[in-house]
Each structure stands twice: as structure tokens, then as C-alpha cells.
Image (tube, rainbow, N blue to C red; front, side, top):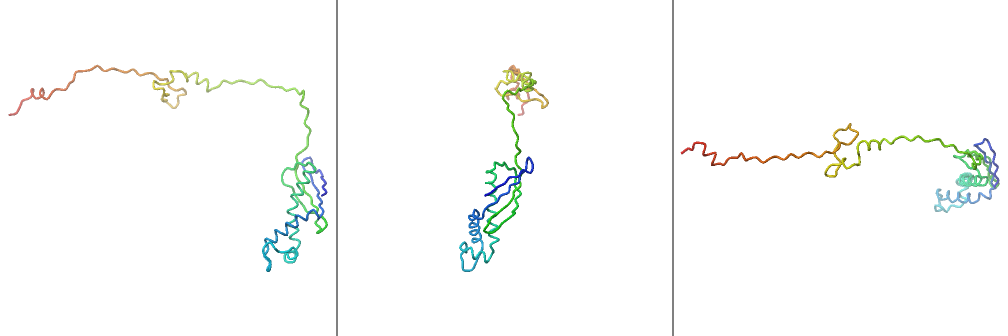
Length: 202
């Protein structure tokens, strides 16, 4: 395989690839087997159609077209690897010559990664600007509200419920004063006492 690389621009190249027909023989044989599985010829089982029958019924051109479509991606990849070309995107391929039994030639234009030289960073000064430290709002709110102190929790150990959705601080829990009611004398009167005050019917 012969390959030439032409630089069209700093980010685009054209590869010209020429391949002897002998190197395409594995691809041609594979194309014959693929076509033999697809066609139906009376007197032959699928996949057992001889190449000469395929040439008579379908044509040699169809087989060569499938062989070239199978070989071009592989040849293109080898050319990139041989010349250390870092391609970006899909190439634009054009078959320029196909002589049955002689050779195959095609071109491929593709965008490439630009080349540039990195400077030596040893001994290069670095300037770092002073960073401005801003107060943490969450910590200031927590400190202002007394979050985390023993007074921020209720007697049961659970956090108190917020009294208003607009409040930025949780309400402080205050122990409610329990009022002790003094025992009072029962105001109930017995049935006998109620009956004694009223008149009894005979």
C-alpha cells in the first residue's frame, strides 16, 4: 500500500492511497460469500453459488463494489496509523481508480488535530491573587439562632415546631408552667338530701 499525505490547512489533510489488487483478494472472496448467501439461483443451495455463476447472473461489478466498501475503512485506518495522523470527524472518501486485477486508488480528506509546541514550564513564574473570604451565611444564622445549644430543643428531645414560615430562626423552647388546681369540695348532693328539701307526695 502506498500513501501520500497532503496538508491542505493546519487543520485539514488529504490522504491519497493506492493498493495493489492482490491485497484486495481477501475482501473480494468475502464479498463473493456474502453475495452467495443473499442470491437465490436454481440448482444451488444458498451460500453455495460459485463465483463464476455470480458473475454471470449478478455481475462482477457488484462484487467489486461490496469488496471496496469493505476494504476502504480498513485501508484508511492503516494510513492514519502509519503517518501518525490524528483525524477528527468522518473523512470524505472518493474512489479515483479501480482497475479489476490491477489496483485501487482513492483519496480521503479529513480534519485533523492541529500541531503546536508547548513551552517549557520549568522555572515559569506563577502569580496567585489573594482570595477574598466571605462569611458563611449558614453559620452566622446558626450562631444567631443558638442552633445546637441545649435550649434549642424541647423537653422531649425533639426540635420544636416553627410558629411562622417567615421566621429565619427556629423558636426557642420554653417550658410551660403547669398550674396546679386546688381540690374543691364536691358540689354533688346526695339523692336523700335533694329529696329532703322537697315535698314528698303520698
